Amino acid sequence: MHTAFLLSVSADSPARQKMAMWPPVAAYLASGWCLFEGFKREDDGTTHFGGYAEAAEQIFLELGLCKVGDAKLQLSDNMQHQRAKLVEDAKASAQKSGCMGYSEFPRILSYVSYSDVWELPIYHAGLYGIVKGFMAFLLSDYSGSNCPEHVIPKKLRSLMRERGKKLRLTAEFGRPYKCIVDSFKSYQLVDWLHFLETFSLFVLRHDILGSVMQELWDKLRSALLHYFRIVVVDDDLLAPGSTFNNDVRHQAQGNLLRYASLVEQHLPESLLTYNLHILVCRLYKQEEARGCTATCGELWVERGDDVTGTQLIGKGTKLKHGALTDAVQHVTQYLHRMGQRHWTEMMSGVSQQPLEICSYTMAHKRGDELMWSVAHRRARTRVSFYAKLRFITRHGSETLYIAEIQHFLRAVNGAADVLRLAVCKRYPARYGLPNMRSTEDIMTAKFQHQDAHVQTVLAVDVSELDTKLVTAKEGNKLYGIVYKNTSGMA
Image 1: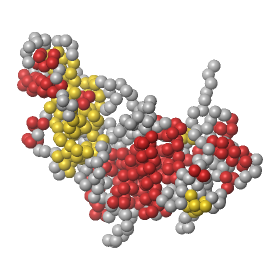
Image 2 (image 1 turned 90 degrees about the vertical axis):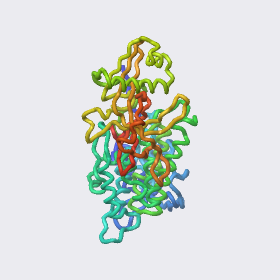
Image 3 (image 1 turned 45 degrees about the vertical axis):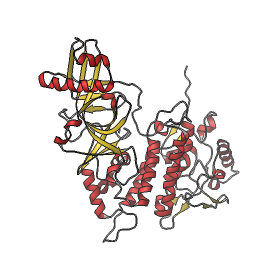
Image 4 (image 1 turned 90 degrees about the horizontal axis):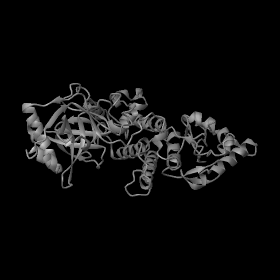
């Protein structure tokens, strides 16, 4: 006999409001998790939520001026049950309670938390509910030469179009880039995710947005990607190196609140949406109650595994003559750098054990992606042979490169030791863009001509390639954009 337990309820906002017995999303007290009061816009009568930069008057409950997150507006589990019972027994007004009665889930299932059982639809609320509205404002139509404040001018929109044409995606990335200027009205959820995570880093570079809009975008992007990306939760959440510690979570919460505050100060009230309110109000607490929000998001994403290792794909070509001589040189150079003495002795002729080297065009780095090389014949409109390389010498020093993978080598000695190497051209890189704060999501390298970087070719272990890159070339610059595969799986 088996017993089933309800762990969570995942639904869009209208469905959640009905199941939770909370008011519709257009109501003044629609939050469900708090009692913060929205306001009606005079021009169209829609409900919006402020209280980020400045406190807002709370009329229904006569609580005076409050900001979003004010402790006296928060609802504990007990308070949720109490108000539901009062409304059901007709002892309290549904309109002033922010509740339409008792939800069947917490009523019947005593172990269910009234607040925590409901999962936010983070991708729909974040992408359709916030990002789409923000970009629609930036790309607002206007006539004549007088561009409204904070709207992107037509001249810069042409530059955005040209940049979009230069993007080259990896093989498995999914949907191609659709011009944000001309096609954003037809963007689907995954298109917005692609743009937020990857394409915007190149298309919306520092010269497109003004300082205020750039800060708005940076804060929004950083906050949403924290909630959209699956992270491995460490046993010790307070450890300094933890990817999910309280400092990281507070920073994400602060970035989202800063975005909301700047919207309230600088942009139209129409952007103070219900979706923005519930994300600011609830995401941090949902994360506290349920862990990483992306693991229960409404997009199907690949759950990363911890398997390590590398597999070269295909039969491979056994090298002979000149090609073998070049390969031996690459292998010897790698062994010298890594200080692998038993291999080094064999390569120098001290050992008589036979050596076999084969060339491959593709490799699969477990826990990461399928990697192509320049030698792979399918590498045309989509390329998967650019990768981030943190090159470490035998002395432990590290240099950042964008690596262009030429081909892969598999070397086996008589003792059955195996090396799996990627022969790469290296382009010295740095994080960030010119005149932009440093970010590890985008890299800039100087792209030299073919005859100028022959000396930069070397072999590295495939495991040293950190991640593949979406790339764009502009003049003598090569830009590498890191993506975490939330968009790649869609």
